[in-house]
Image (cartoon, rainbow, N blue to C red; front, side, top):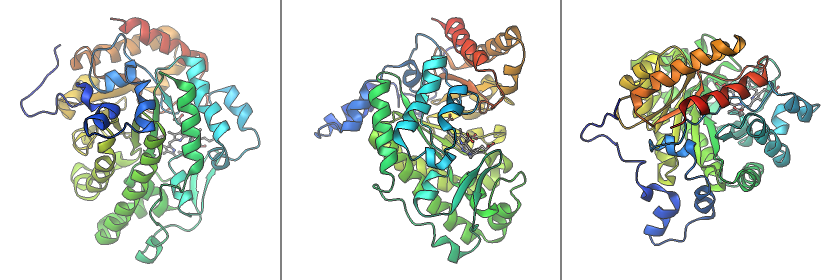
Length: 384
Ligand SMILES: Cc1c2[nH]c(c1CCC(=O)O)Cc1[nH]c(c(CCC(=O)O)c1C)Cc1[nH]c(c(CCC(=O)O)c1C)Cc1[nH]c(c(C)c1CCC(=O)O)C2
Protein backbone atom coordinates (compact mmCIF):
# COMPACT_ATOMS: atom_id res chain seq x y z
CA UNK A 1 0.00 0.00 0.00
CA UNK A 2 1.43 3.45 -0.82
CA UNK A 3 2.31 5.97 1.86
CA UNK A 4 -0.70 7.99 2.85
CA UNK A 5 0.09 11.69 2.78
CA UNK A 6 -2.54 14.30 3.47
CA UNK A 7 -2.12 18.01 2.80
CA UNK A 8 -0.67 19.75 5.82
CA UNK A 9 0.74 16.54 7.27
CA UNK A 10 4.32 16.60 8.49
CA UNK A 11 5.01 14.10 5.77
CA UNK A 12 8.44 15.40 4.81
CA UNK A 13 9.86 16.11 8.19
CA UNK A 14 12.38 13.27 8.14
CA UNK A 15 12.64 12.82 4.40
CA UNK A 16 15.04 15.61 3.57
CA UNK A 17 18.71 15.63 4.41
CA UNK A 18 18.55 19.11 5.92
CA UNK A 19 17.07 17.54 9.04
CA UNK A 20 20.44 15.97 9.75
CA UNK A 21 21.84 17.69 12.81
CA UNK A 22 25.15 18.31 11.03
CA UNK A 23 23.55 19.88 7.97
CA UNK A 24 21.21 21.98 10.09
CA UNK A 25 24.19 23.31 12.02
CA UNK A 26 26.04 24.02 8.79
CA UNK A 27 23.07 25.89 7.34
CA UNK A 28 22.77 28.07 10.42
CA UNK A 29 26.40 29.04 9.88
CA UNK A 30 27.64 27.17 12.96
CA UNK A 31 30.27 24.51 13.08
CA UNK A 32 28.49 21.13 13.44
CA UNK A 33 28.82 20.04 17.06
CA UNK A 34 30.82 16.96 18.01
CA UNK A 35 27.51 15.20 18.66
CA UNK A 36 26.17 16.01 15.19
CA UNK A 37 29.33 14.70 13.51
CA UNK A 38 29.11 11.46 15.49
CA UNK A 39 25.46 10.99 14.60
CA UNK A 40 26.48 11.25 10.96
CA UNK A 41 28.10 7.80 11.11
CA UNK A 42 24.72 6.17 11.76
CA UNK A 43 22.68 8.57 9.65
CA UNK A 44 22.09 6.11 6.80
CA UNK A 45 21.45 3.07 8.99
CA UNK A 46 18.24 1.13 8.30
CA UNK A 47 16.99 2.09 11.77
CA UNK A 48 17.33 5.86 11.32
CA UNK A 49 16.11 5.68 7.72
CA UNK A 50 12.96 3.83 8.86
CA UNK A 51 12.43 6.35 11.67
CA UNK A 52 12.55 9.10 9.01
CA UNK A 53 10.24 6.99 6.78
CA UNK A 54 12.84 6.71 4.04
CA UNK A 55 13.26 3.55 1.95
CA UNK A 56 15.23 0.80 3.72
CA UNK A 57 17.09 -2.30 2.46
CA UNK A 58 15.32 -4.35 5.16
CA UNK A 59 13.06 -3.69 8.14
CA UNK A 60 15.29 -2.72 11.07
CA UNK A 61 14.81 -4.58 14.34
CA UNK A 62 15.81 -4.08 17.97
CA UNK A 63 14.25 -5.19 21.27
CA UNK A 64 13.22 -3.22 24.31
CA UNK A 65 15.17 -4.64 27.31
CA UNK A 66 17.55 -6.35 24.90
CA UNK A 67 20.37 -5.56 27.32
CA UNK A 68 19.73 -7.49 30.47
CA UNK A 69 18.88 -10.64 32.26
CA UNK A 70 18.07 -12.87 29.29
CA UNK A 71 21.80 -12.90 28.49
CA UNK A 72 24.25 -15.08 30.47
CA UNK A 73 27.07 -12.66 29.60
CA UNK A 74 25.02 -9.88 31.26
CA UNK A 75 24.51 -11.86 34.47
CA UNK A 76 28.24 -12.57 34.52
CA UNK A 77 29.43 -8.95 34.29
CA UNK A 78 26.72 -7.74 36.71
CA UNK A 79 27.63 -10.26 39.40
CA UNK A 80 27.83 -8.51 42.79
CA UNK A 81 27.20 -5.03 41.37
CA UNK A 82 23.87 -3.38 42.31
CA UNK A 83 21.79 -2.21 39.33
CA UNK A 84 22.06 1.55 39.92
CA UNK A 85 25.78 1.33 40.63
CA UNK A 86 26.29 -0.50 37.35
CA UNK A 87 24.64 2.43 35.53
CA UNK A 88 27.37 4.73 36.85
CA UNK A 89 30.31 2.70 35.51
CA UNK A 90 30.90 3.79 31.90
CA UNK A 91 33.02 0.79 30.84
CA UNK A 92 30.42 -1.62 32.23
CA UNK A 93 27.56 0.32 30.60
CA UNK A 94 29.42 0.14 27.32
CA UNK A 95 29.94 -3.62 27.59
CA UNK A 96 26.31 -4.36 28.57
CA UNK A 97 24.92 -2.10 25.82
CA UNK A 98 27.08 -3.84 23.21
CA UNK A 99 26.28 -7.41 24.31
CA UNK A 100 22.94 -7.75 22.46
CA UNK A 101 24.33 -5.95 19.38
CA UNK A 102 27.16 -8.47 19.10
CA UNK A 103 25.00 -11.48 19.84
CA UNK A 104 21.74 -10.75 18.00
CA UNK A 105 22.95 -8.38 15.22
CA UNK A 106 20.13 -5.97 16.04
CA UNK A 107 19.98 -2.73 14.03
CA UNK A 108 20.27 -0.41 17.03
CA UNK A 109 21.73 -0.37 20.52
CA UNK A 110 19.71 0.91 23.48
CA UNK A 111 21.72 2.65 26.15
CA UNK A 112 22.01 0.58 29.31
CA UNK A 113 20.65 2.67 32.17
CA UNK A 114 17.28 3.05 33.86
CA UNK A 115 14.44 5.55 33.94
CA UNK A 116 15.15 6.31 37.62
CA UNK A 117 18.85 7.16 37.12
CA UNK A 118 18.16 10.92 36.58
CA UNK A 119 15.98 10.94 39.74
CA UNK A 120 18.93 9.59 41.68
CA UNK A 121 21.13 12.24 40.04
CA UNK A 122 18.97 15.04 41.49
CA UNK A 123 19.14 13.46 44.94
CA UNK A 124 16.04 11.28 45.23
CA UNK A 125 16.64 8.26 47.47
CA UNK A 126 15.79 5.49 45.00
CA UNK A 127 16.94 1.91 44.69
CA UNK A 128 16.16 -0.83 42.18
CA UNK A 129 15.26 -4.00 44.03
CA UNK A 130 15.87 -7.21 42.03
CA UNK A 131 12.59 -8.79 40.97
CA UNK A 132 10.63 -5.76 42.25
CA UNK A 133 11.77 -2.63 40.41
CA UNK A 134 12.35 0.97 41.54
CA UNK A 135 11.58 1.71 45.20
CA UNK A 136 11.48 5.29 46.55
CA UNK A 137 12.37 5.80 50.22
CA UNK A 138 10.28 8.97 50.71
CA UNK A 139 7.44 9.22 48.18
CA UNK A 140 6.44 12.61 46.74
CA UNK A 141 2.98 13.52 48.04
CA UNK A 142 2.92 17.30 48.75
CA UNK A 143 4.10 20.67 47.45
CA UNK A 144 6.80 20.56 50.09
CA UNK A 145 8.02 17.20 48.75
CA UNK A 146 8.29 18.74 45.27
CA UNK A 147 11.22 20.88 46.41
CA UNK A 148 13.30 17.70 46.34
CA UNK A 149 12.84 17.47 42.59
CA UNK A 150 15.36 20.06 41.47
CA UNK A 151 16.19 20.50 37.76
CA UNK A 152 18.90 18.32 36.25
CA UNK A 153 21.99 20.35 35.31
CA UNK A 154 24.04 19.48 32.19
CA UNK A 155 27.01 18.35 34.32
CA UNK A 156 25.01 16.26 36.80
CA UNK A 157 25.67 12.98 35.00
CA UNK A 158 29.30 12.86 33.80
CA UNK A 159 29.14 9.04 33.82
CA UNK A 160 26.34 9.16 31.22
CA UNK A 161 28.24 11.52 28.95
CA UNK A 162 31.32 9.33 29.22
CA UNK A 163 29.45 6.05 28.60
CA UNK A 164 27.58 7.42 25.56
CA UNK A 165 30.85 8.76 24.14
CA UNK A 166 32.60 5.40 24.55
CA UNK A 167 29.65 3.64 22.95
CA UNK A 168 29.26 5.89 19.95
CA UNK A 169 32.98 5.50 19.17
CA UNK A 170 32.63 1.73 19.30
CA UNK A 171 29.26 1.43 17.52
CA UNK A 172 30.29 3.33 14.36
CA UNK A 173 27.39 3.12 11.93
CA UNK A 174 25.06 1.31 14.40
CA UNK A 175 22.79 3.91 16.01
CA UNK A 176 22.55 4.35 19.76
CA UNK A 177 19.08 4.98 21.19
CA UNK A 178 19.00 7.20 24.25
CA UNK A 179 15.94 7.05 26.47
CA UNK A 180 14.10 8.40 29.48
CA UNK A 181 10.97 7.72 31.48
CA UNK A 182 8.02 9.98 30.66
CA UNK A 183 6.54 12.24 33.35
CA UNK A 184 3.49 10.03 34.09
CA UNK A 185 5.48 6.81 34.53
CA UNK A 186 8.12 8.52 36.70
CA UNK A 187 5.37 10.23 38.73
CA UNK A 188 3.76 6.87 39.38
CA UNK A 189 6.96 5.48 40.95
CA UNK A 190 7.53 8.69 42.94
CA UNK A 191 3.98 9.00 44.29
CA UNK A 192 3.32 5.30 44.95
CA UNK A 193 6.81 4.74 46.34
CA UNK A 194 7.33 1.73 44.08
CA UNK A 195 5.76 -0.34 41.32
CA UNK A 196 1.96 -0.30 41.23
CA UNK A 197 -0.71 -2.04 39.15
CA UNK A 198 -3.58 0.30 39.97
CA UNK A 199 -1.66 3.60 40.33
CA UNK A 200 -4.19 4.56 43.01
CA UNK A 201 -2.22 7.21 44.89
CA UNK A 202 -1.03 8.65 41.59
CA UNK A 203 -4.56 8.93 40.23
CA UNK A 204 -5.82 10.27 43.56
CA UNK A 205 -3.35 13.16 43.22
CA UNK A 206 -4.16 13.65 39.54
CA UNK A 207 -7.92 13.90 40.16
CA UNK A 208 -7.91 15.36 43.67
CA UNK A 209 -4.99 17.82 43.64
CA UNK A 210 -4.67 18.88 40.00
CA UNK A 211 -2.37 21.81 40.76
CA UNK A 212 0.08 19.68 42.70
CA UNK A 213 -0.08 17.04 39.95
CA UNK A 214 0.56 19.61 37.21
CA UNK A 215 3.55 21.00 39.12
CA UNK A 216 4.92 17.48 39.65
CA UNK A 217 4.75 16.37 36.02
CA UNK A 218 6.11 19.75 34.90
CA UNK A 219 9.20 19.30 37.08
CA UNK A 220 9.57 15.75 35.83
CA UNK A 221 9.34 16.99 32.23
CA UNK A 222 12.35 19.23 32.87
CA UNK A 223 14.35 16.40 34.45
CA UNK A 224 13.44 14.02 31.62
CA UNK A 225 14.31 16.58 28.94
CA UNK A 226 17.63 17.19 30.72
CA UNK A 227 18.46 13.46 30.74
CA UNK A 228 17.66 13.14 27.03
CA UNK A 229 19.70 16.22 26.13
CA UNK A 230 22.74 14.82 27.94
CA UNK A 231 22.50 11.62 25.90
CA UNK A 232 21.91 13.39 22.56
CA UNK A 233 24.72 15.89 23.16
CA UNK A 234 27.05 12.96 23.83
CA UNK A 235 26.08 11.25 20.56
CA UNK A 236 22.81 9.28 20.87
CA UNK A 237 21.17 9.38 17.44
CA UNK A 238 17.55 8.73 18.45
CA UNK A 239 15.60 8.85 21.71
CA UNK A 240 12.76 6.81 23.15
CA UNK A 241 10.43 8.24 25.76
CA UNK A 242 9.00 5.35 27.80
CA UNK A 243 5.55 6.04 29.23
CA UNK A 244 5.24 2.38 30.15
CA UNK A 245 2.28 2.69 32.53
CA UNK A 246 0.24 5.50 30.92
CA UNK A 247 -2.10 2.93 29.34
CA UNK A 248 -3.85 3.00 32.73
CA UNK A 249 -5.47 6.32 31.74
CA UNK A 250 -8.52 7.22 29.66
CA UNK A 251 -7.86 9.49 26.65
CA UNK A 252 -9.47 12.60 28.20
CA UNK A 253 -7.37 12.27 31.35
CA UNK A 254 -4.26 11.72 29.25
CA UNK A 255 -5.02 14.84 27.20
CA UNK A 256 -5.68 16.99 30.26
CA UNK A 257 -3.21 15.72 32.81
CA UNK A 258 -0.27 14.11 31.00
CA UNK A 259 0.01 15.33 27.43
CA UNK A 260 1.21 18.88 28.30
CA UNK A 261 4.20 17.48 30.21
CA UNK A 262 5.08 14.87 27.57
CA UNK A 263 4.78 17.52 24.86
CA UNK A 264 7.17 19.72 26.82
CA UNK A 265 9.75 16.92 26.76
CA UNK A 266 9.42 16.34 23.01
CA UNK A 267 9.54 20.07 22.27
CA UNK A 268 12.69 20.44 24.34
CA UNK A 269 14.61 17.90 22.25
CA UNK A 270 13.06 18.80 18.87
CA UNK A 271 15.88 21.23 17.91
CA UNK A 272 18.40 18.37 17.83
CA UNK A 273 16.58 16.78 14.90
CA UNK A 274 17.00 13.19 16.12
CA UNK A 275 13.99 10.85 15.77
CA UNK A 276 11.80 10.75 18.86
CA UNK A 277 10.06 7.45 19.70
CA UNK A 278 7.19 7.24 22.22
CA UNK A 279 6.07 3.97 23.77
CA UNK A 280 3.69 2.70 26.42
CA UNK A 281 1.98 -0.59 27.24
CA UNK A 282 -1.80 -0.98 26.73
CA UNK A 283 -1.98 2.39 24.98
CA UNK A 284 -4.26 1.35 22.08
CA UNK A 285 -6.74 4.13 22.90
CA UNK A 286 -3.96 6.71 23.31
CA UNK A 287 -1.88 6.10 20.18
CA UNK A 288 -3.16 9.17 18.32
CA UNK A 289 -2.56 11.47 21.30
CA UNK A 290 0.88 10.03 22.01
CA UNK A 291 1.85 10.79 18.43
CA UNK A 292 0.43 14.31 18.73
CA UNK A 293 2.51 14.88 21.86
CA UNK A 294 5.48 15.13 19.52
CA UNK A 295 6.68 11.65 18.58
CA UNK A 296 8.12 10.90 15.15
CA UNK A 297 7.77 7.17 15.80
CA UNK A 298 4.95 5.66 17.86
CA UNK A 299 5.60 2.38 19.67
CA UNK A 300 2.72 -0.10 19.64
CA UNK A 301 2.17 -3.08 21.94
CA UNK A 302 0.78 -6.38 20.62
CA UNK A 303 -2.88 -5.61 21.31
CA UNK A 304 -3.38 -3.41 18.22
CA UNK A 305 -2.35 -4.60 14.72
CA UNK A 306 0.03 -2.16 13.02
CA UNK A 307 -2.36 -1.37 10.17
CA UNK A 308 -5.00 -0.32 12.74
CA UNK A 309 -2.34 1.60 14.71
CA UNK A 310 -1.37 3.43 11.49
CA UNK A 311 -4.96 4.64 11.13
CA UNK A 312 -5.07 5.80 14.75
CA UNK A 313 -1.71 7.57 14.62
CA UNK A 314 -2.39 9.22 11.26
CA UNK A 315 0.04 10.14 8.50
CA UNK A 316 3.56 11.44 8.87
CA UNK A 317 4.76 9.12 11.62
CA UNK A 318 6.61 5.81 11.68
CA UNK A 319 5.53 2.88 13.86
CA UNK A 320 7.56 0.56 16.06
CA UNK A 321 6.49 -2.90 17.19
CA UNK A 322 4.73 -5.13 17.85
CA UNK A 323 5.26 -8.88 18.31
CA UNK A 324 3.77 -10.26 21.55
CA UNK A 325 6.90 -11.02 23.62
CA UNK A 326 5.33 -14.26 24.88
CA UNK A 327 5.36 -15.59 21.29
CA UNK A 328 9.11 -16.11 21.76
CA UNK A 329 8.33 -19.05 24.04
CA UNK A 330 6.63 -20.91 21.15
CA UNK A 331 8.48 -23.09 18.59
CA UNK A 332 10.48 -21.28 15.87
CA UNK A 333 7.87 -21.86 13.20
CA UNK A 334 5.15 -20.20 15.28
CA UNK A 335 7.47 -17.26 16.03
CA UNK A 336 8.09 -16.83 12.31
CA UNK A 337 4.39 -17.03 11.44
CA UNK A 338 3.58 -14.34 14.00
CA UNK A 339 6.57 -12.18 12.95
CA UNK A 340 5.43 -12.41 9.32
CA UNK A 341 1.97 -11.19 10.39
CA UNK A 342 3.59 -8.13 11.96
CA UNK A 343 5.58 -7.42 8.78
CA UNK A 344 2.45 -7.89 6.72
CA UNK A 345 0.40 -5.47 8.86
CA UNK A 346 3.25 -2.96 8.58
CA UNK A 347 2.80 -2.88 4.82
CA UNK A 348 0.01 -0.38 5.58
CA UNK A 349 2.91 2.05 6.09
CA UNK A 350 4.34 1.49 2.64
CA UNK A 351 7.88 0.37 2.03
CA UNK A 352 9.30 2.12 5.06
CA UNK A 353 8.34 3.68 8.35
CA UNK A 354 8.36 0.43 10.32
CA UNK A 355 10.83 -0.57 13.02
CA UNK A 356 10.32 -4.15 14.18
CA UNK A 357 10.28 -4.66 17.94
CA UNK A 358 8.43 -6.62 20.59
CA UNK A 359 5.20 -5.17 21.97
CA UNK A 360 7.05 -4.82 25.30
CA UNK A 361 10.41 -5.89 26.65
CA UNK A 362 12.48 -9.06 26.46
CA UNK A 363 11.67 -11.26 29.45
CA UNK A 364 14.47 -12.63 31.65
CA UNK A 365 13.46 -16.26 30.98
CA UNK A 366 13.58 -15.92 27.17
CA UNK A 367 15.97 -18.07 25.16
CA UNK A 368 18.52 -15.64 23.67
CA UNK A 369 18.91 -17.91 20.62
CA UNK A 370 15.21 -17.41 19.80
CA UNK A 371 15.86 -13.64 19.68
CA UNK A 372 18.93 -14.07 17.45
CA UNK A 373 16.88 -16.24 15.08
CA UNK A 374 14.08 -13.67 15.04
CA UNK A 375 16.46 -10.87 14.00
CA UNK A 376 17.77 -12.97 11.10
CA UNK A 377 14.22 -13.88 10.10
CA UNK A 378 13.00 -10.26 10.07
CA UNK A 379 16.00 -9.20 7.98
CA UNK A 380 15.50 -12.00 5.51
CA UNK A 381 11.70 -11.85 5.24
CA UNK A 382 11.72 -8.06 4.75
CA UNK A 383 14.70 -7.80 2.35
CA UNK A 384 13.81 -5.47 -0.53
C1 LIG B 1 9.35 0.88 33.66
C2 LIG B 1 10.82 0.91 33.36
C3 LIG B 1 11.88 0.77 34.30
N1 LIG B 1 13.05 0.89 33.58
C4 LIG B 1 12.79 1.08 32.26
C5 LIG B 1 11.40 1.15 32.11
C6 LIG B 1 10.69 1.43 30.82
C7 LIG B 1 10.71 0.23 29.93
C8 LIG B 1 9.70 -0.81 30.23
O1 LIG B 1 8.50 -0.53 30.19
O2 LIG B 1 10.13 -1.93 30.45
C9 LIG B 1 13.74 1.32 31.17
C10 LIG B 1 14.94 0.49 31.10
N2 LIG B 1 15.53 -0.27 32.08
C11 LIG B 1 16.66 -0.84 31.59
C12 LIG B 1 16.84 -0.40 30.26
C13 LIG B 1 18.12 -0.74 29.50
C14 LIG B 1 18.10 -0.91 28.10
C15 LIG B 1 17.30 -2.06 27.54
O3 LIG B 1 16.10 -1.86 27.27
O4 LIG B 1 17.88 -3.12 27.31
C16 LIG B 1 15.76 0.40 29.93
C17 LIG B 1 15.44 1.09 28.63
C18 LIG B 1 17.58 -1.72 32.30
C19 LIG B 1 17.08 -2.46 33.45
N3 LIG B 1 16.30 -2.01 34.47
C20 LIG B 1 16.12 -3.00 35.39
C21 LIG B 1 16.83 -4.16 34.96
C22 LIG B 1 16.95 -5.45 35.73
C23 LIG B 1 18.04 -5.25 36.72
C24 LIG B 1 18.71 -6.53 37.12
O5 LIG B 1 19.47 -7.07 36.31
O6 LIG B 1 18.50 -6.93 38.27
C25 LIG B 1 17.45 -3.81 33.76
C26 LIG B 1 18.37 -4.67 32.93
C27 LIG B 1 15.35 -2.86 36.63
C28 LIG B 1 14.01 -2.29 36.45
N4 LIG B 1 13.76 -0.95 36.26
C29 LIG B 1 12.40 -0.77 36.06
C30 LIG B 1 11.79 -2.05 36.15
C31 LIG B 1 10.30 -2.32 36.00
C32 LIG B 1 12.80 -3.00 36.38
C33 LIG B 1 12.70 -4.50 36.47
C34 LIG B 1 12.52 -4.97 37.88
C35 LIG B 1 12.69 -6.48 37.99
O7 LIG B 1 11.78 -7.20 37.55
O8 LIG B 1 13.73 -6.91 38.48
C36 LIG B 1 11.78 0.52 35.74
